[in-house]
Amino acid sequence: MRGRALFLTQLLHADLTASTRPFVFTTLRGKPLRRSGLQRRPVGPGRQRQPPHFPALAPVAPGLTFHGLRHSHKTWLIEDGVPEVAQARRLGHAMQNKIDDVYSHVATSVEERLLRHLEARWQRAIEHHNREGDNPEPLRLTA
Image (cartoon, rainbow, N blue to C red; front, side, top):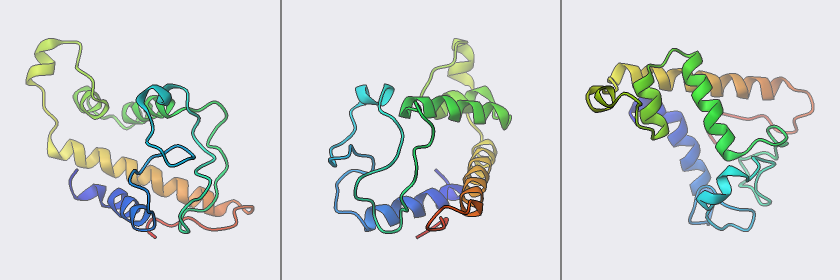
């Protein structure tokens, strides 16, 4: 990713710096997630022992799985007017039209716009979390 993904890089860096585990996304026991579990593994409430800069969070939504997050991501891409080729590449899919799949490419400006929209969503989520009165610790963009 290019420069606009800096906020994600900062979050991952903070998490990895504070962690002794070899993987970013793990089971509650610190084992790597298996692809087969992503279809059914619920998202949240988070790891049992979180790094200090990660506040305890309630489950995102009952029944939401990691695979379900891909559906949300696709929906956001559509809502933000991201071209189909960028959606397909982002999700690791081939496009139905073979000619489009071979000859279509994602322009840098499209990728940058996509990342700006995702970062704005992240910022709005942080602001929403911080406005809620029962959250013990405010979230920040970086540690």
